[in-house]
Length: 136
Image (cartoon, rainbow, N blue to C red):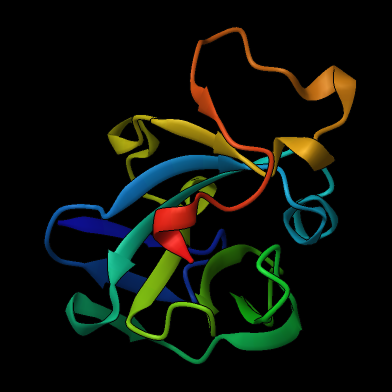
C-alpha cells in the first residue's frame, strides 16, 4: 500500500497494489510543475486509488503530447498526483508526496531529450529520449 498527501494534511491518498513503474520524468511539463530538472514518479492503477479531500487541478500538455491533469493541494500547493489522458486507467504519484519516499526505486529515466545537462543522476538507469514505445 502506498500512502501520501500534501504538506498541510488537507489531501490524503492511498494506492493499492504494486507500482506499474518507477521513473524519473524529465519532460518539460514535469520540469515546469516542479521547478526542477526531473520528477520522480510512480504509476499505479486508477482502480486501486482513493483520495480524501478535494485537490485542485491543472490541465496541461504532458510529455506524451496529450492532456495531463496535475492534482495539487489548493491550500499548501503540494503537487500530489497526475491523471494522464494518455493512460486513463493509471494515476501517477509524485514521489515527494509519499509518506515513505523510500518506497520509490527508480527503474528508468524518461524524456531525457528534455533533461538539462545539470540534472543527470549519479545512478545508472535505462534512459529513453521520449516515452518508451510500450507505454504509448
